[in-house]
Image 1 (cartoon, helix red, strand yellow):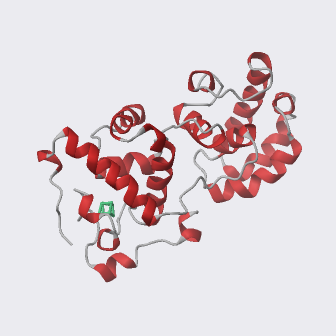
Image 2 (cartoon, rainbow, N blue to C red):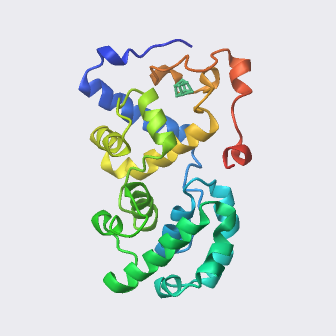
Length: 241
Ligand code: SF4
């Protein structure tokens, strides 16, 4: 396996084709790629996504059953007893800020959206504590509206793939949106997140065990020797932490 992509000499068309090939190949590599957060409706997904800031999805999934059972509507969050809510959120970290966001979201949904989570990006980002990343997660997974979620994995992999040189998540999102077919935006993000968690890690990517190395100009960012690289690959349980 060697470097076969020279991104500096690549035409815009070639980059678009390579981006789409990468998305397809990641689909074959991670056919189970999907959002790891558990939810049953848009409000639950919005809450889980807010809680996932600076916290693993696994930990969020441990906490949310009790939260969802206690608060079943936007009105319930708006009227939440702050101490009680903070107590439930404590294991996810930053629990005071997260409780603030959820109480504020509940109030805003009640006041401006008849208690329902809106299905438009421009409305979602007006909710307290909700940025484009959270909004795109909710749009893509609860409403079926294609959205590119630029989290730490998607940002890092997009740069390693040389699909962007940007570090600002909104600019990364814009670059990816121009390369990837709109209908694939949500699944492309999910696949990149899985690849980032399992193989293309921040510190030592498992390049020698990476099935898309041929399409990646950053082959060699991590160990290329197959046995050494294979030891870096994480299974589902480890990757979810
Ligand atoms: S693991 Fe290495 S070869 Fe694979 S995508 Fe990441 S940087 Fe590229």
